[in-house]
Image (cartoon, rainbow, N blue to C red; front, side, top):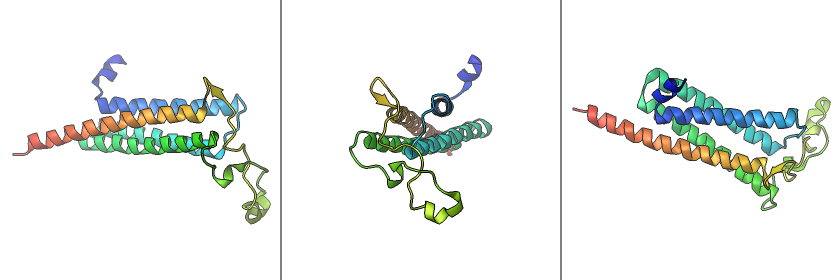
Length: 180
């Protein structure tokens, strides 16, 4: 296994780390929900979607980079991952701001009763089920799950952005060296 990892480029390692980090965050979120009984709010679910997207983009990018051995494909994949993690960090930042009362959350975050599937149009006027996005259900060392997601997403954004810049510079040098 160690020999395989040593054969990977920095970009491929960054994509692999992003893939593993998103998978672990998603596993943790689902464990808190299923085992811990914490019900996610609407913004929590949005943050999960960002990590599902990040996981898919990183996995696809890693596969494409290994299959095609193209610096341009690798730079594109890690750049797309950086974009996804910037959105993830933005969602987490917004959620942390809602938790601390810096700004209001979306109207759908108000919590409330269950939607009536029999009368879909009427149920659109009622708030969604789930807790309010302002309510923090769990903290560790004073930081909420949204706060930890912000830290991890910002770190993954920085890592993938750095890898994208490095890979695009490498691709540019390679193209210049190949030109007659």
